[in-house]
Image 1: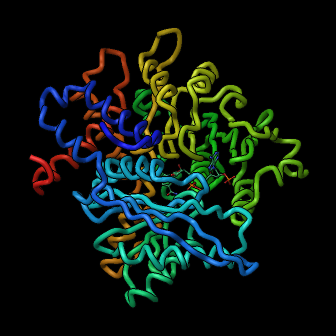
Image 2 (image 1 turned 90 degrees about the horizontal axis):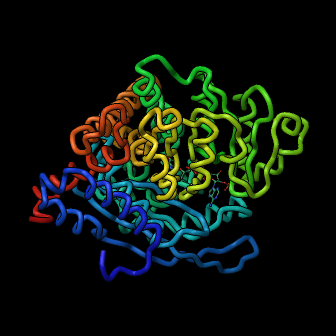
Image 3 (image 1 turned 60 degrees about the vertical axis):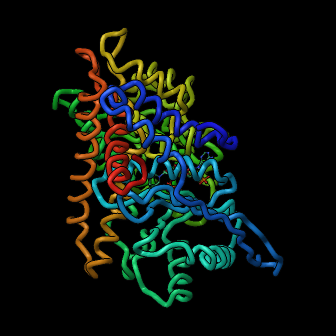
Length: 458
Ligand code: NDP
């Protein structure tokens, strides 16, 4: 990691992974893996390009577009596209790096990549979004393909944007192929793909709850704090409710809605919020309506964590670094026992260190268990992998089939991390195994071994 430009988010993701490998017995058993890490920390390729498009006033607009093709040891590069004004190379490298090991954990043949643009979809008309997507894909299509690199959605990119980009790829390349995932249901998309990250997150946490309680507990009766109100947050909330839990918060980039008193967000309220987000509006625009103002408090500019009262589970599902050290302490004080990231790198390193230090029960409270995004939110890319398989076979599976496969993948993600932690970190008696260490080691080992067989390092 010497002589690299200042890339704070990427350095944070790299250090988080490297420190768990260093603190395990992996490098003692396999010292040569240090070399693999050195090689794997540099992307195979980074594509950067300009995107010039015309706004509704007929004026020229220009943005920066990127695709980080990080690692193709296990399959074609795979990872989402993010459209957000904050997008830069450091953020995309962190996301691409995480994606390599996440994809390995799914057990499917997918490499790791990430891309996007510093384009802000907020305040743009549908026509402007379409023109931007067309301009973006006009360049990106030269670098991707069903067997090369298969992007998907992420923040600011949902089915509508995937549709415009797919259409432009098809026009330029004269090829209908599974080059993007998250496609529409009638033209190659997989059922359950929109739901997959949120549902998968909740399936993963179900296993955490079951293991930690010796099979006695489930989501039933649990109070669950969620941040974000986009794709991941909406479907995580719906699944929690379906399993008998109570959703006490949702948020967006401008503020949080927090339940006051008894009850829960309902599926109807979540549907209203989903519609709001399709219209690219903020939660503040409904906070004062009759339907919401008596039941929820709106906290302008605040994240939910320090305002949710007693909670059992926290699911950060908005963006990176959205749980600080102080908020981690607050969540523990509020009784939270399970923290699982729907977002990528949802917790700061300080927050992770605080959660990880509380894996032992009876130190003045219950054990706290933290699950990193690269394991807990792998359901989205897993169903993207299933979408690729369906496209290659020119088949569509039923929602039930895909959901069953998703459940199986999340179960094996959980057990893979758990068992690997037991093997390489040897937790003391009465301490929950570290899911962050176990997931990092399991994902890394698989990628490093494939890279060695390809002659990428020796
Ligand atoms: P969406 O764009 O659908 O929703 C993002 C949500 O997070 C919105 O509520 C948005 O608020 C909020 N948000 C975005 N940026 C910030 C910020 N800087 N501060 C506070 N809130 C913010 O994205 P997704 O739900 O798809 O993604 C959420 C997270 O999950 C991301 O970290 C993503 O990388 C991760 N993820 C997504 C997967 C997927 O399949 N979609 C797969 C795996 C991980 P607003 O509406 O105001 O913009």
